[in-house]
Image (cartoon, rainbow, N blue to C red; front, side, top):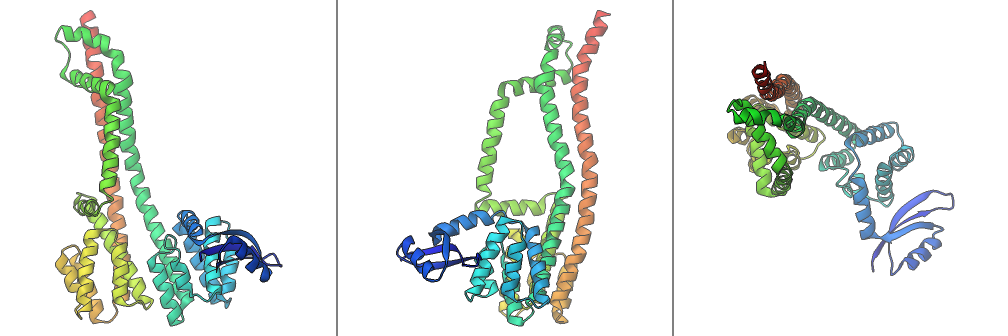
Length: 403
């Protein structure tokens, strides 16, 4: 018999959700009526799950950080877990968060552990959060684990926002440059063609103007086809990057690109160190922590190096040696990890590495962007100056000839 997911109300008006196995919706209604429940919605479990997944895609990390922090505060104050989840559900103003918390609370009420309830929503609660919650439940320090997850989530959101904010202005300059030059070539240059034709007949048209006219005519004749080709190329590239080989080649290029490659590498390594250190500090076994942390780097090249390191640890060897052999981790990072292993203080060393690398990397990113901005302005100004010179030289020459 199929499973039905329902939403019903008690006599007091309180809303509850659950799962029933029945032959039809009418059997579900009869079963709920026997429990003094009045159903407001009944759907097949598979359909409800698909709808739920469609909703929870829009839950943002910064909203989850608030949930983690508030849940930790409630538990620390002695409020029971079920009551804490109910309070968060009632006070949340975001329907997506309410839907997720409602399901989590119902699963906990049915006897599931909090970590297992969170795992039902992989698009909302990542493996890092689930593993830390599980370790907190098993070790009796759930509120501390939730507080650390909140701090970690806020920290990652802040770092992401700073990186995106730093790159926004250079990208804006590049797009503005392309649009302005394209507009000049398509709409302004053709207005000067009558003057250019007379000079071209006399063989007095400057080389720069000839080049400008060629580009303008090309855009007028083939501009639409160029846009179609670029769109088709973008679609092909997007599909290629979805393949394993495409993603791997992109990750290789990210690490090798001049200027930005070392910054991307440092950000990935610092994220790996922070997640691994946070997991170890919360009592998660090192092999499981490495499996989670390697995926958090966001780079397959680094993930492969960490996978090899995990194999060494399972064989009773150290973590530092295979990381050094990969050639992707800086020597000072490897040395600090080695010292942390020997001193049995690896988790704190990893967190210190993450703090130091993030501060240094952000300074490098800020310097890179500061250098990139004047370069983009000079490039933009140089292109526009070339266009204006190519337009004005024939005009001045014609005026001189008339004089």
